[in-house]
Amino acid sequence: MVTYNPFNPNSTVTPTLFAGRSDQTLQIISKLAQVKRGMSSNFIFHGERGIGKTALARSILHIAESKNQRSENLNFLTSYYSVEKGQHFRTVLQAVLNQLTDKLPKPSIERLTDRLGDLFKRGKFSFGAFGMNVAVDSGQMGFPLDEDNIEQHFKDQVVSVLTNILLGLKEVEKQKKYDGLLIVLDEIHNAKDIQGIAQLIRSITTTLDMNDLGNISFIIIGYSEAIQSFFEGDPSARRSFDSISLTGMPHEEAKEVLTKGFDEARIGYDKKILDEKVKLAGGYPHSLQVLGHNLIEVDTDNYIGVDDWGEAIGEAARELQDKEFLNLYNFKGKQKLREEILNILAWAMVPVPKSILAKEFPSNIHSKSCLPELKKSGAVKEDPETGNLSLHSSLFRSAIFFHTVNKSSFIKNEKWWEICQRITKRLKPDEIEG
Ligand SMILES: Nc1ncnc2c1ncn2[C@@H]1O[C@H](COP(=O)(O)OP(=O)(O)O)[C@@H](O)[C@H]1O
Ligand SMILES: [Mg+2]
Image 1 (spheres, rainbow, N blue to C red):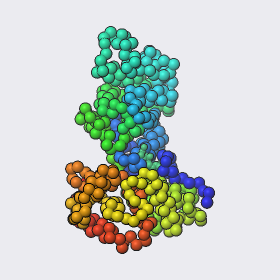
Image 2 (image 1 turned 30 degrees about the vertical axis):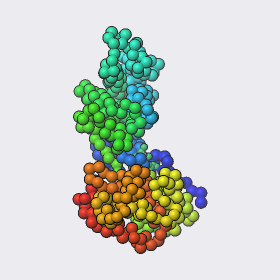
Image 3 (image 1 turned 180 degrees about the vertical axis):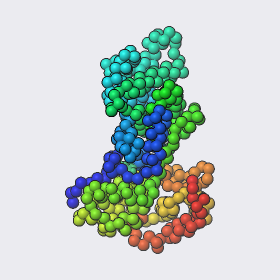
Image 4 (image 1 turned 90 degrees about the vertical axis):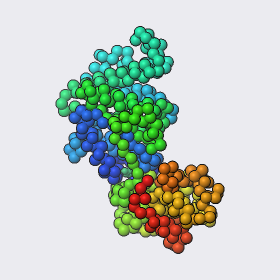
């Protein structure tokens, strides 16, 4: 049936369909209220692909511009930029500042033109010292520039640009006054020189803070693996970023992702079945979108009932298994030891200590074809500190959920299911963390 389908796993939800993440949103909004009063604050969003980092940022941007009474009346001038692979951070900042100028009120533009000379020509910034321009710059400054000087010089230029933008914002007539700047930099793991970024941002915002121009906030977004390198070289930078670690959504928030979409499409649904089936997505927003999309597609009577779920899960499973996981799991043939172990790791929902798993499969688990192979293929990751095993991604987990649920209506008769139950019972809550 042709209905409007509000679910789309390949694009970022609009603010109206954004669901949950209420703790994180509250935390960030209350910090932005402080930024509004002049205390700068920075954030780093991290988590795996598809966990909802960009979606959260989009929602925050919306709130930060909304002048909504219920969320601190925020009225920030904002900018969103997604870093390209191999891009140098200086070109990122230059692009962001240029993006901002398109939105700047007149007093800011006039200030920039008056004060910045060659740096701001015909309404565009062009920072020297991008390598090519070094000769010119060192000539102007009267001494040769080495890498450190270039870095310093660049920082000074950015500070002076931001100073003039922020002072300009303060001169705007009262009704149109902005609270400050909110700058989102997405996919930071793509940056070529990721190591120096935290330090640079910290030093820029601290300098502005000292000059009573702390109305600025950066939100940096990246994969968790990249966070280490992001902070490298400046341990104290960690303290000037609030870390927002995104993981699977809690049950009620996950349900909200689907119900908001159903309501938007004006489609009814069986609440009890939703409550049960939504667990298959493991709280992973990308999988929730895949499920929601398929549910709307298979529905014929404007009501999502048990049959729709059966069909949609089948479709979702096919979608997720097709390419990405072809070599990690046999979705077609008979389930062998590898699949049984992966099923257990998926359904256990928490990292499983290697020792507990080894007790269940005493002879074969350490054989070359088993655990070492699972780790090598990337299907399973082992926490080097605890020895706990987990699946490599939430997307993979959802694919296994959809597959195992769909394959057999008697999942509870499977041998691996029994083992899984035993294992999860043994995992006391304090062992579960990790
Ligand atoms: N809070 C949410 N409510 C509804 N949909 C969400 C939410 N968070 C993420 N999504 C959806 O899940 C998918 C993946 O989210 P995305 O923000 O692109 O993840 P990431 O940036 O972490 O890779 C997108 O389709 C997005 O719209
Ligand atoms: Mg993203």
